[in-house]
Every structure is written in C-alpha cells, then in structure tokens.
Image (cartoon, rainbow, N blue to C red):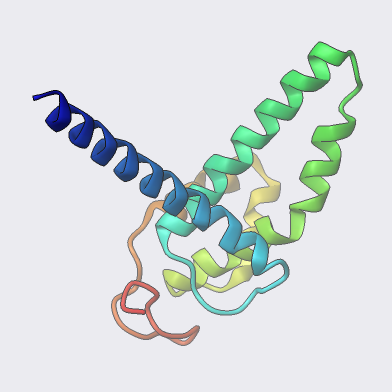
Length: 137
C-alpha cells in the first residue's frame, strides 16, 4: 500500500513537472524568436509568454522593493523583452489574419482593449497569408 502511494505521488510529481516545463517552453520559445515578426503564434504561445512576463515583472519589482532600488531591474527586463513582446503580438495578430500594424492600437487605452479581444480570438482555420496554422504544425 505504501509502495502504491509512492508511485502515485511520483506520477503526479512527474506530470506536474512536465506541465511546468511545457508551460515555461512557450515563454522560452518566444525569447528564442527574439525579433521574428513573421509567421503565426497560437493563443497558448502568446498568453503563456504574457503570464511569465508579468510574473518576471512582479518578482523583480518585489526584489527592487526589498532592496530599495529604483525600478532599474524591471526597466532592464522590460527593455530586454521589448522586441520579443512586439514580435509575439504581431505573430498572434497574424494568426487571426490581421496585419501587425494593429499593434499600434496598444498606444491608446481603448486600443489596448481591442488588442486583448483580438488576442483571445481563435486561430484562422488552415493556412492564411501569414503561413500555416500553428495548431496543425
């Protein structure tokens, strides 16, 4: 019985670890495509990147607050990930068959809401002018 519990717990731990690795993979894949503005990005790729980006900002902000630093770390982090952030946003727009120029809407408050609505939309089925559907790849 004790052996069975250990196997179940190990199995759960492995599943959690694999899920965590897959989740982190989306973030790292965006960073690897540092300045890639072509192609398409799935919703999962965009939102997992956004999640880890925000977690990074919060953690760095907390560290800065504890140490008493001005916003140096968060500024460097944001600046360093500016191009990947723009790139994944453009690729996400490509996935719903929209031009990357729609990213300029993010410069306004209402435009940011419109972009969020775009980013939560499902992929255009099949191939579009920006490439094959990443769900099928």
